[in-house]
Image (cartoon, rainbow, N blue to C red; front, side, top):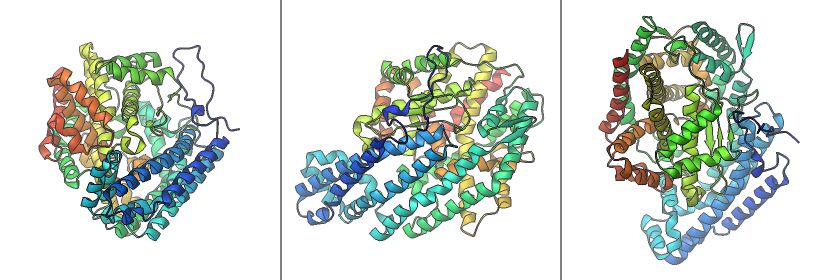
Length: 602
């Protein structure tokens, strides 16, 4: 049997944790995986018996309401069963990217899930044949159906973009094949090796070295990674182009007005709100990123910084490294400032083997919190190196995990949170840790902490909006035909140059750095959610400062609501309106205030 969860040395308190997935399944060969898929198929077969009931019940609101409740319950059960198995393969492949057996299982299960799910295709199509008033009458007539109102809202939102049953089935069955391009992209990056002197570094190792206090180390890592990205660019560009074309075709058939429209719909956010945010951020480039990087260059005795110096520490002095125990305590103490409930939920993840923090060969770079399903607990993945940023990453992912556990009682369907709100708890958690660290810092420590917070903000806001604009222009070019590597490179340099400003030199080789941004492939137009979340949290932090005691219960209600409320409904109790450009300008102003504090310490 393939080993998925290496044993954890429990004798040392600072041993980095490795998760144990056996509370999901014992391993890839566990017969329970097939059994759960069979049970999911049975639930969907039972759901299929309801086909025609919704139309037949149009004149009987109570019968229609009962059918809605039964259908949603069966659909959620099937989703949970398949979702648990698919989560297991995702989690397993994350720590074993080069394990062909796990990769095959993941691909096979996704294909099987797509085929099984065709039995539920009729559901949204038939529900969307009903009129709004018919559904409203059914919900009023049947109390237990009322809980599904947010689920129905999402289904109804896709009504103008639905295709025929046969076409929907075709797209669903094709999905696993399309996903192989994502797999190719991921596996290419996992196998990528950067030659740095006599060393051969993984992508994650090379990126980590960009935070080294030694300029020569940063330059060597960046140069080696640039060459590795250039060598792999043909495959990565092909994957990006192919998936963009697949999206283009489906968008055309579904009559989406823009490439980002489907993401807006999934996020339940207005395009106008996203555009207002992007405009507000774009107009702040000079006051934020351009200004900060000029200040940083001045501190480092330079007129401008090479791109590999963008996130460099301000001094050559070795920066403080945090042990796992220290990081854990900082996060728990910070969470406790919001109330014991938040710290207790986070503590559970440390007490149990639900975190995988140890970097190692074959493990994916990055970090995430996977919710699995409402009937299971989430898992947290990161690559902990002891850097300050990794302490914040730990807080970020545990913020997600706490959010997921708070919303879990709603069930998987209603707990699922749109991306516009999904980053709220994670970014807020980072903010709590920052406040904790800066409270007792010396002036030099405060300067370093402010620099780190500002750079995190620039990465979450400026950089992600730049990514969003890159995607907009790339997808526009793709409408005219395949986008060559030279075209992608030129577009990347143009957009990143605008956002970073004249104090950052985009040295030779940087033109290929689009190639490792996995969000472009995994989830087109996902990236603006980070800026949305960061600026939204800036506003929430201000509300908390005004009234800490009154804020906590409102904040807990926001997280516990999962996806039952739209972003405007969720933020109304705080008196905030994200549709207004002024709202986003307020978030940018908070970041500008941090830069003001930083400059005052120079």
